[in-house]
Image 1 (spheres, helix red, strand yellow):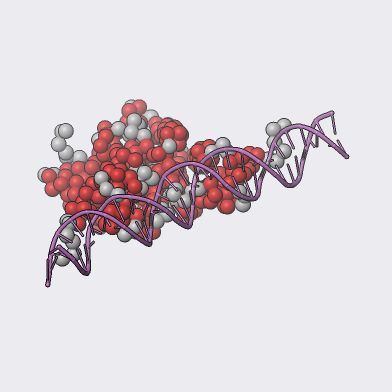
Image 2 (spheres, rainbow over the protein chains, first blue to last red):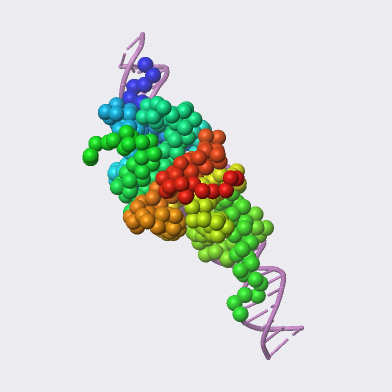
Length: 202
Length: 202
DNA sequence: ACGTTATGGTAACGCTTGTTACGAACCAGG
DNA sequence: CCTGGTTCGTAACAAGCGTTACCATAACGT
């Protein structure tokens, strides 16, 4: 019995507060005091739950990966065809809705933080490569006739497009609307043949 | 007679120092003291040339835009056909070489900073829209038969792909090598027809 | 019930940051 | 030569940061 109060709940609450602050005030505004205030506690409590600021960031980053990964799992499993699954996974990786734009901003914040923190950078690389693997598998399912190298390059290109839509939407939602993101993704998916463009009307 | 010593020279020297610090330590390392030390002067001198740090930041952001814009002008003017110009412009917007990856990291840093700074955000949006306009013009030159809406959506998609390659290269140069970037861009450009894929062998 | 231990708050530390007040050095005009 | 204004360096300021030591308190085992 290591805890009397629920510690994992505290960790999750603090990570949520971290997201909130990161989305609202950006990376320079992400301070321990801001997170503590957002979570309704003090910095002492934060540093009792996490060893340092880096540990807090790592946990929040892992949680973000879990959230996006689970959502990818859901939309992938709900799709009827591999083409629809690929489209749904890429679309949810971009930020088509307003609520997802907040997550895109958090993503950009972690990306920038990873540029200065080797630990976060390694996490980011690992998560991104896992996402590329997922997309590569879907591409291979859509086009079993393609050689592996083509599936691989196509997957990296699609991921780059999705993440580019992500970052651009984070800073300029007017230019990169949800509809524009869908058009761009469908245009890229058209390269896979008409089967991949087969998607529900909505 | 506003100045006895050359002030524009001072600004240029501080610009060079700003860029040097930015490339080496990133945006969080861009402090007034670091810039002053790199320029061989003191913070008092820096704040006599720039009113605040925000003015310095805006200047650095403009520096980044100038650099990328000038290079885009050069490669665009050097291209023989509109298709080659489009490809060259997009390729230089991504980060194919090692030295360009440094610039890509700076770009990501400014992107993250713009999420919390309205002034930097407005600058970022303006520069990006100008870049989209440039790409749109090139797309229209390659495919004069396309309606304007198609050129527009194609341009935003291409820009998103280039910026996505930019951000992903900044954090994971191993996965997103220069060759991988070229393949992804050429694949996207193939949608414009064989004319756009016409590019020098190198 | 009591003592032990976990748990969270308080307040301070050392450090760096942006910013500013002030003094010294310089160049012009008379 | 001296005088006045401009330019830059010096040094200090207040504020904010991450971090730590310390203390109150509440919950458990016995």
